[in-house]
Length: 170
Image (cartoon, one colour):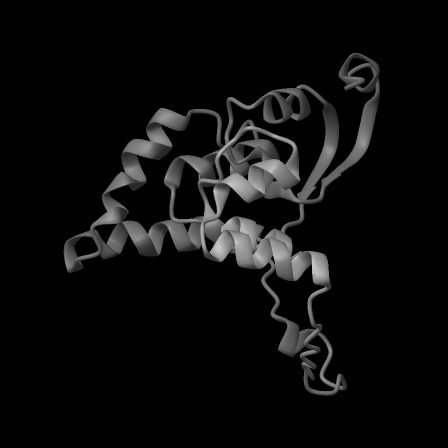
């Protein structure tokens, strides 16, 4: 990564797509992007915010490092949320109030209402003769034949995975 070059620039905006990749604050990507200087920051993700409080802090710390500087305080204050009883509802409400200005949540239904409903088409494709032979050998656990045909001397451990490969599973 060319982080040493990017660190020299004072950025107006840093917009991070796939923001869930920095939820681990000790990952190299997370450490590197936090070193960048900018006036404004924005996180984009299609991944819902998870229930892990420390990961949430990591995202918030990237957005506003001065406001969310200490993970220990944040973790301690909101660790009680894992037990959702009436006593801890105050913590949940407080956290929601803190997060509300930072989150714009949209669902596909609200984004484009003129799209036609999703249409799924299943196309079944038969196996070739070679695939049928491999399939038969895997199903019958004919490892000797599989090893000879494959040219490798390793045993097949995960039969389901091998079947997916034989049948052109993506």
